[in-house]
Each structure stands twice: as structure tokens, then as C-alpha cells.
Amino acid sequence: SYTLAGAFVLVLGGLFVWGILWIAAGGTPQSVHRYVTYMNESVSGLNVDSAVKYRGMQVGKVESINIDPSNPERIRLVLQVRDDTPITVDTLATLDYQGLTGLATVNLSGAVSNSARLTPRDGEDYPVIRSQPSLFARLDSTTSDLIGNLILVTENVNALLDEQNRGNIAATLDNVAQLSADVAAQSGRM
Image (cartoon, rainbow, N blue to C red):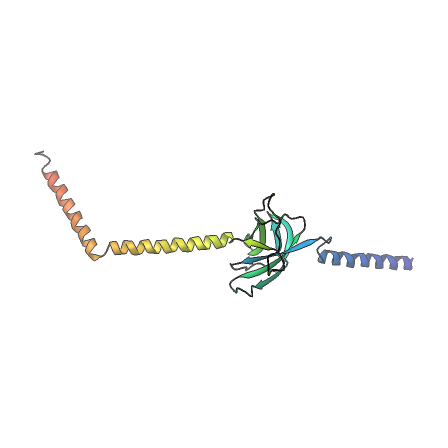
């Protein structure tokens, strides 16, 4: 009975180790394609092994994050995406942030069913998915433009209301007040 209990413990321990290794490897092996996308914005919150989603459904992960050697203003992301994901020439990659945690994912969208499959360009190891700014980057740009326009309007109003124009407006208001007093005094004769 000790031999049977020892064999049971060894088999159970082996299955436990195999299960841990299987989960750590990502579950059932799947065939993937690698794609590259270039981000022109900050990728803070994005890590290696962050999720890659296609219209919200997880289809892969980020394999590597590097500065683009040909343009240091861009970040080069290599993505592992399942083979059955329809990545076409119309597909766009966007950074999406998850709630208050600040963790980022890469969201793929915009694929059209009758478009051609994405293929590698000259000089690239993998096909390049076009990127577009994230919601936060677009809000930041719009807010900056809005503040710039507000400053310009304020400067123009200040230039319009210089000391001389304020004096002219005050004199005009005094004249209007005097005119209205004169009209009120003459209302009986009218």
C-alpha cells in the first residue's frame, strides 16, 4: 500500500507540474502570425505580453517593445496574433487603456471582409499594421488646440479693450445715459 500511495503522489505531482507549465506557456499551443505596428505616442502602461485584441476579443499578445532605430520618435511593437484573425490592409492598431489601472492593450479594428490580407513590405520582417492615435492622445491634441485658441481670443479681446477704447466705451455709455435722461425729461412734451 505504501508503494501504491507513493506512485499516486508521484503521478499527481507530475500532473501538477505539467499543469503549471501548460498554464505558464499560455494553454493550448496556437499557430500565430507576427505583425509590426509603429506608435507615435507614449506607450506607457503597455508591457511585453500585454493583450492584443481584435474588436475587444483577445487574439494575441505583445511580443516586444522597442524604439524604432530608423525614427527614435516612434515605438516599434511586434505583435503575436492568432492565424484565424482577419488582419487586412484596412486594419488599424490603437492603444486602449483599461479603466483606472492605466494598463494598456493594443486593439485592432477596421478590417473589411473583402480586403486583401496584409503582407510584409520591403525592408520589414513582418507585415506592418497602420496605427492611429488613442482616445487620450486625440483628447490631448484637441485640448491643446482649444487652449491655444482660447489664449488667442483672450489676447484679441485685450487688444480690443485697450485703455483708449475703454475710455471711448465709457464716454459712449455716459452719452447714452444723458440722452435717455433728456428723452425722459422731454417725454411730457412728446
